[in-house]
Image 1: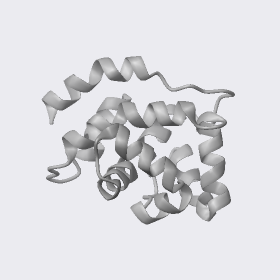
Image 2: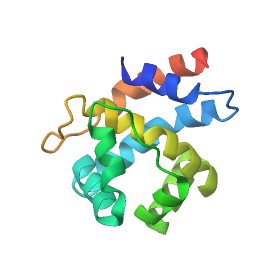
Image 3: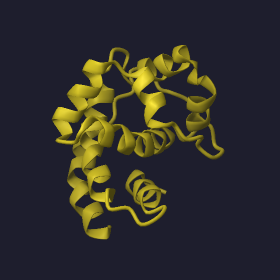
Amino acid sequence: MGLLDSVISTIRGGPSPSAPEQALLLPVVIEFVNGYPGGLQGLIQKFQREGLAEVVSSWLGSGPNQPVSPAQLQSVLSDDEVEHLAKTSGQAPDVLLGNLSKLLPTLVDHVTPDGQLGQNQELDVDLLMGSVSGVLRKL
């Protein structure tokens, strides 16, 4: 299953008026991950240092993804990072954290299908940007 199919499946988990917001957040999240010190690997290490090693390990593995709450995300991300993501996405910080809590596990799971992080793994923002409008039509 491709990333967009996974995201659609995740955000369709129930009737969600925020599904379009979640889809539009994808490019912002990918740019954030790519710009994070150490990229995806650096972000995952931050989750591990903040006590969420078991949660993030589930995203890397082949089993079901454990959820991450908005409060847990807030404990991992700095206030400046949350504010930057909120401003870039046009979403209020609490809305952003709620949407990010649904998208981030799916994103990490998709880019690590064998459970391994590549060195300097960069996520392809252009590929996703070209597909977001298709995602919105399916919602």
